[in-house]
Length: 342
Ligand code: NAD
Ligand code: GDD
Image (cartoon, rainbow, N blue to C red; front, side, top):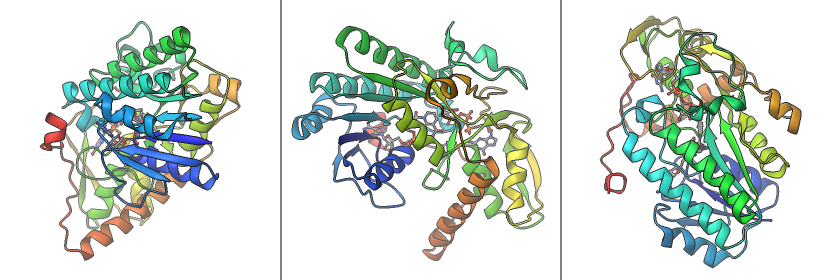
């Protein structure tokens, strides 16, 4: 098959490209940056800004009809990024989603995949601990995560309307917090699993690590291999509406930190500080995807986090050998790159 993956310089996009190449497909990659940690195995890499229609269409004009288009490009990150850059996130990702979907329609792609998020769900249902897990019908009435979540709902609907009005086959996954090797682990866009690993690795024994809030917030975390496998199942399956793609192993952030500490038997004190918190408790209800596609996650948090921890440790050792200074504590990213602010 001829396949386009946008966001192929990012975490999930790059891992998907690797899987598709391993399966023998012809893969075209698009992103405005190359993967940070490894070379992309894509057959061709378009270094383009997908916020611009012309740059987006140039890919389709040059490659012809795609069998599959996976749109994973977005301006995104963990809570530290999402809470601080609402305008940027919503503007950029609305433009990207619209351009890629429109080009897929115009150049008659056979199938289109959109990576939505658990942040599309109604936040009113996520205010407590031990909330019922989120099932697909809980996105409406809509009150998603500010900025980022509204863009996700908008793009989900755009996919639905393009399917209904133009006959483009569209598929949508609502990813729940994805982690693993090759994911962002520093700089402020990282999510809690990578942040906890980095903090533990960079803190000397008997030291303390910072945790935003009281650490009692609950989440579920999906390992990247499960995410890639589930993405392919959703894309190639018959179910046209949004589906959860996540783990249903619910943990407190405190416990996530404990697991990270367990790999090298570190005993660190948790220091609770103010920070961007997001919802209080969120879990994925996987009943529907299990019913319609027979998918369920197969990698436990302990197993996946151990792989991630030692991958981050390897990256830290490489950077240290190059004399790069590294911080354990969390930062809110400062977005100074002109491309982001226009
Ligand atoms: P990521 O940030 O690692 O990858 C996104 C990629 O999009 C980046 O490489 C970035 O350079 C690229 N991009 C951004 N703006 C661009 C532009 N204007 N032109 C070209 N490329 C551009 O993120 P990810 O974790 O790989 O996420 C992939 C998708 O999955 C996103 O849509 C994200 O919202 C969604 N998602 C991810 C998670 C998660 O936990 N990782 C959870 C829910 C949803
Ligand atoms: N990132 C991060 N870094 N989070 C921390 C830290 C830290 O150092 N310390 C505590 N936390 C807490 C956050 O305050 C939040 O309550 C929880 O850990 C989870 O934070 P994130 O992993 O950053 O994000 P999220 O789960 O709220 O949302 C993420 O997942 C969505 C899908 O489920 C985001 O990455 C969204 O982009 C994504 O769509």
